[in-house]
Image 1: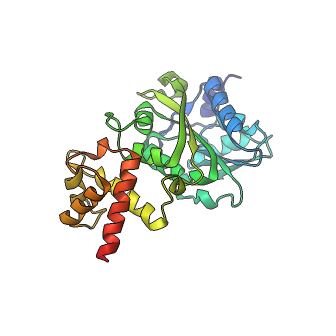
Image 2: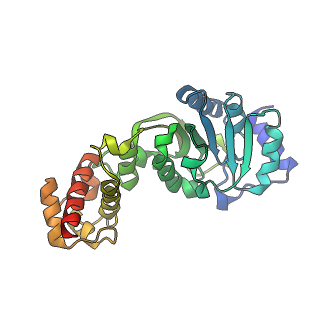
Image 3: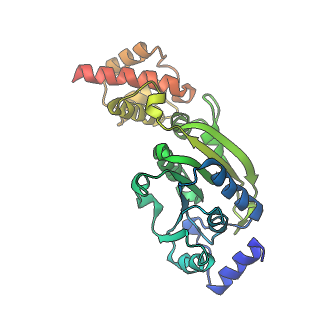
Length: 293
């Protein structure tokens, strides 16, 4: 039975209607599902735990199960648990977990094991989930997700480009490589969304803080606060955005000193700065804050 036919059959069998509130657009492109699963298998170690985010009606779950690795498939909608259990009954390596992935401690989920995160991310949680996945990237061999095309543009954007923003900077901090192997049109999903989606293969850095020059935890937190402050008021200059943001508690003269120490013109905007600029600025901000303390 084809994947579209199987999906329709499960919807009818269990009297299911996709919930717009949960961004339920079920993947029905079998070639895309197989390619995403193969990308996971190619880039993760044989002992890695595969964590699926939003198993839905099993389009990815089944080809992931066929890889032979341990799979933990998370699904928040209780109505979808029975069909998922039916689909995976023959796979002892799969565990269906009825839980909200946003409430899980992924870093501690499989202590001592690397993870491979994969999923067709729900539209209403895409940004939140991407940031959460990047934060635990140090324990992930690979992250393979589908997101709406606009979000993919933000993840891959470079400084000065229209889509460049806070998510872009965090991606540049946490990730070593971003691949975009395929674009999926609305027909790849049921029901059809109004936008195209893009498959992303994200290769996390094992130690982003070390890669950024050996940041300690305090300096890394200063970096995160500086990035958030820089994009809190996108129409303002960098100096004014930093001064107006609640993320940084610094007077303008202190900020001017930090900007000068970092060699950054405060008249620029946050959208123009690369991750190296933000690291320099964050170190200067941290030094100024420590001197004040």
